[in-house]
Structures are given as C-alpha cells and as structure tokens.
Image (cartoon, rainbow, N blue to C red; front, top):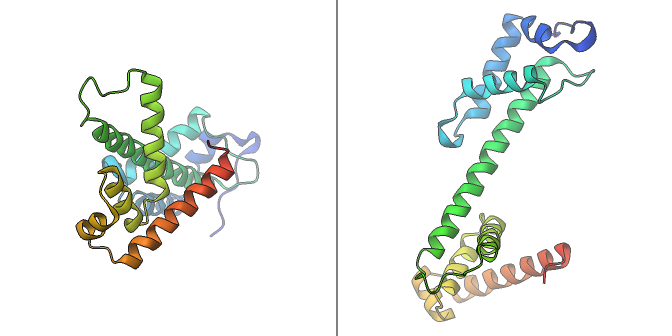
Length: 183
C-alpha cells in the first residue's frame, strides 16, 4: 500500500490528520503488537496516543524522507523500549534497596552518594546477568556468605554448573572492567 504523501513543509499535524483508514488500522495493529506485555499496565492506545502527542509537540521530529506511519511506528518502538528500560531500572533499584534494608541504622553507609553508587553497582550487576540464572544463584550465595558447597546445595547446582557460572561471572566482570576502566 502506498502511503499518502506528506504536505509541503512537513506539517506533522496535517500528515497525521491525512492518514487513511488503512494507515490508522496499521498503526493500531503496530501499537497492539508493541504494547503486548508492557509493564505498568501500558496499553496499545496509550502507546499510540503518546507517539502522536510527542510528534505533535515536536519532541519527536519527522525526518523529511520518512513516511508518517513508519515514523510513528518507530516512535512507538522507542516508547516501548523506554518503558521496559524504566521498569527494569526501577525493579533493580527496588531490589538493591531491599538488599540494603537488612542493615541496621548503624551499619548503613553514612554517605548518600556512596549508597547511591552501591545501588547503581548492584543494579548493573543484576542487569549484566539477568539472563544467566546460575550466575545469579552464585551471586546470591556469595552475598549470603555461603561456601561453594553450600551454594551448590542450596541452589541445586552441580560442581560443573557452579564452576562454569563462576568462570562466566569472572570473565564478564573482567571484560566490563577493561572496557569501562572500572577500578
């Protein structure tokens, strides 16, 4: 299907207003696909409306040679990614805060900046290994000050699974330290 040409001057409001019923149906279908499983109850209509609102406000600018439907689909993709990123960050911060909640007032770091850096570091580590459950089990066991044998027993890891997870953890942390110049 050929999309309707945009009016001269790239007026986004006129371009959106001039979308055909078929174009609107395509945008609705794209929004439904992008909104599937989004966190915090974000629905397809929210996604589509936010994409249009950002285009109309000028927050997202329509490039000269991009069709309006493709542009709005890209904005929706970006908004969905942003929602997932925000949800992961919030979940990581909450998880890190829960990790710190076990401390008494005397044990808590006094410097809020150090506390924030610790939370960010924990969040980064959890994101780095979010898809590796064995490494997360090893990290959890180490945080609980368990021995290797206790970690294997508590989490049901074989000796080989435990050793491989430790190697993946060590290699990833070394790569990260070398890439980002971390101490």
